Each structure stands twice: as C-alpha cells, then as structure tokens.
Amino acid sequence: EKDLSYAAKHNQFFNKYQTVVNTKHKTISRVELLMRWENQGKQISPALFRPETEETGLINMLTVQALQPAITALTHCFIFR
Picture 1 (cartoon, one colour):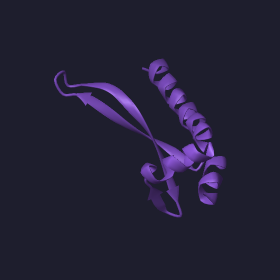
Picture 2: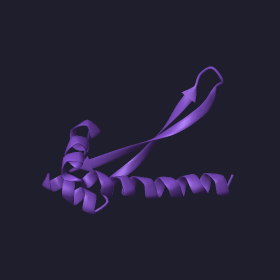
Picture 3: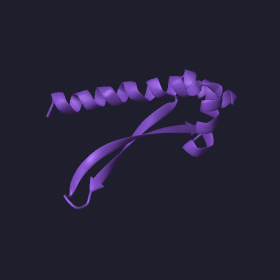
Picture 4: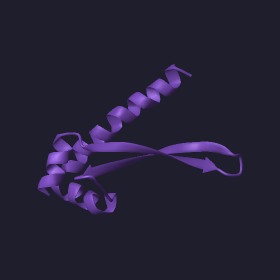
C-alpha cells in the first residue's frame, strides 16, 4: 500500500492506449485508456493494484492523472489533423 500511495502522489502511473478495431468495416471504432504502473522496474498488473486503489480512495487521484494527458492527447488529434 505504501508503494501504491507513493506512486500515485508522484505520478508514477502512465497511460497506454489500445485501439479497438471494427473488423467488419476495417476501421478503428474507439480507443481504450489503460493505466499502467511500473514499480522497481517491473510492470504491475492493474488486477493487482486496482482493488487497493478503490479501497483506499486513490482511484479518484489516478482517474484525474489518467484523464488529463488523455484529454490533451485527444485535443491534439483534433487540432493538428
């Protein structure tokens, strides 16, 4: 829990984006935001850290940390295309 709290407070989580493809139309139908955490050189599965973030209330802080860069990236997609 200590590592998780430290990581959340020091922005050590990062976003990965995964496209979802509509195979019928061969188009990208959406993009999913996946939050990742690397601790001491190892990637920690969200299945391991997510329940604890929900129990401790850190999920709110992590949601904001995930959405801010995602919104910025999305804004750039529309502005610079």
